[in-house]
Length: 424
Image 1 (cartoon, rainbow, N blue to C red):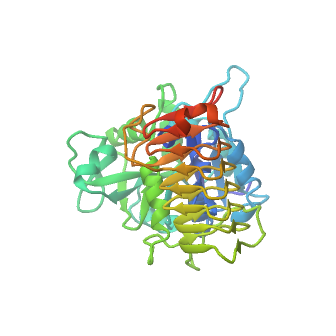
Image 2: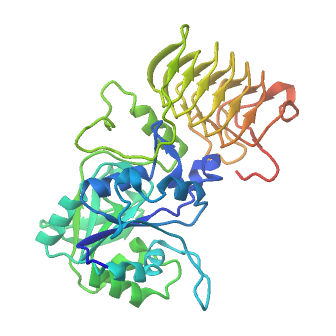
Image 3: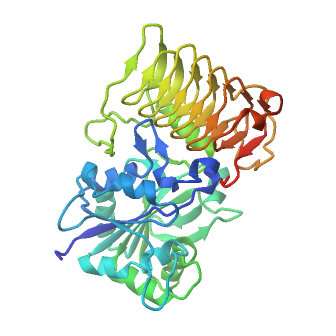
């Protein structure tokens, strides 16, 4: 193996349970975003745009869609003999088989992969954030400060700081205190879960702490290094960064893409976001169709009306159907006369003719009020909604449903239908 200056380890095993039925069959990093992409495309594109050509992607929960999407890394120019992209699931060892049980434990279980490249530096990334970042600039900062660890940090409103790992720095940006989700934060600089480690420091810490249960960077590794007087610095990041971990933030981030001047621009030439796309047919917009302020994917056929929405590839909106303020993912069909408002409809779904989705007054979810809120109707992969039914707000549907599932042809706001054998 040729020695690498810096390799990236991308944590992509997350279940993303706060995305509800959207992540029943797919890991959160594989969820569609922006009509064309999957969430993991953003850190992968950042890597190749930053000159990093060796990336280990650590998978665990429902990895099939993710593995298929990454393949051998061609869209990101990561199909290389020396380096490139490697998918790293947990594997059976001679003495035991062990799931990844914490962010740092997952990295520890792949020490041998990293040793192959004997890097000077290791970049640790999360696979579930939307942002553009030049990791090379962060590495330059790390070297200038002769740091052992550099943590990317983002200023957040003080009232939100307790949701994050918070860093307190001196005038040289050296971290003097690190608090994981503190009730009374002393700073508003939040850790983004992006770390550059000098390789010997990372290796020694992981080996020393390997027996801790649920070994985690924020809870264990960083505090341990801090106690041992390692040089830990904060690299301040002031551009767009979105954790799309809730249905509300996921819906908002998609809707922001269609603003007149989007805060997060997918059209920049100098920092492209790459993806694997199997659909190459052109879109078709019918004679009587109306489309305003929308992202329309490859191979879409629109005969009805689309307003303020994000459509994935291969979506069909039939005559008389209206889609408004919604995210419709790949290969979903909205049949004649249906009305879909403020909804997230996952891949390969069918909305029956004349059905109304996302309508009526809001009511609290009976399934899980902390997940199914924001006034959204959320429909999981491969679901079918029969014709002529009404579906309210803060609802969840998963599976092939029939008229028998809808008393009086209605799923009231706050209600849910999760078919037997399916998960919420």
